[in-house]
Image 1 (cartoon, rainbow, N blue to C red):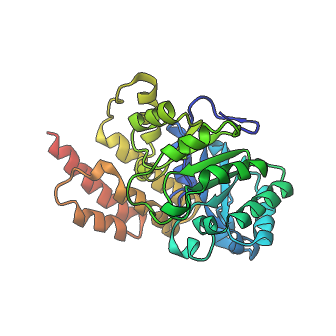
Image 2 (image 1 turned 90 degrees about the horizontal axis):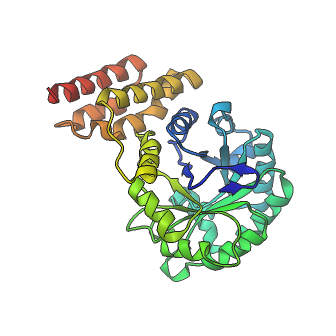
Image 3 (image 1 turned 30 degrees about the vertical axis):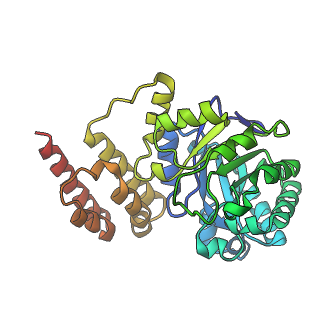
Length: 330
């Protein structure tokens, strides 16, 4: 699959953009374990043009994580175009436009998936951004606003006509948020539309290599994007690729291997940010990691992980959890 000149190989797996999740440390780990392309956290166009420091930090891309995309969201044509130009200066490989985020603070203000209620405005924003920048522009969106307005098949053609280089579709409507099952049938319909010639990337409920393989085999998508399933387990990309290649589950490493990866993530975040912010960016991954799910009465340990405010304190809790896991295997 190619996005413009960027060759991602056959059946690529991409890390979805997720707020408070896809910081640079996590992206680097996902690339290390086989993610073919990674995306930044959501970047607000309004905050970017106001020169908000915390937002501008999201534009930083490490050379080792490329190919990488910066994703922006907003609802005003001029602001989105200006933000796109600012992003181009950060030299991402791809600029992605977020028309899929369903959370109220974004969609409720007309941005993200809220733009699905104003498809003409969405198309205008995309057209103007494609004209304004020299890097590949892609779009991520949903099936529609709700069940009665699933407009993605027709909308995909309009977005392609604007000049985008690829389209990612999450198989839910905005009304569904993240509930119910993702509907891949409409994703497949877009992919199999003879008028579509750009890569179509499918997203939604891909948690195993078997599911990723089925998405490629059944719906013919060019790429699969992995989101929430990667939280706390960046190694999922290696596991998925092993299954797609062999048809078998990848043998598990010892628990200490995975725990060491999580420690590396903490240290990387601290080095790139500082201790306080590094810990904050790591908490969600540590507490959500399936490595710790088998621990009896895990809740107090999880709370301690979420409350730890220093590296020493967090590593002490992680070490405690590791000892419990190792003792249970004796």
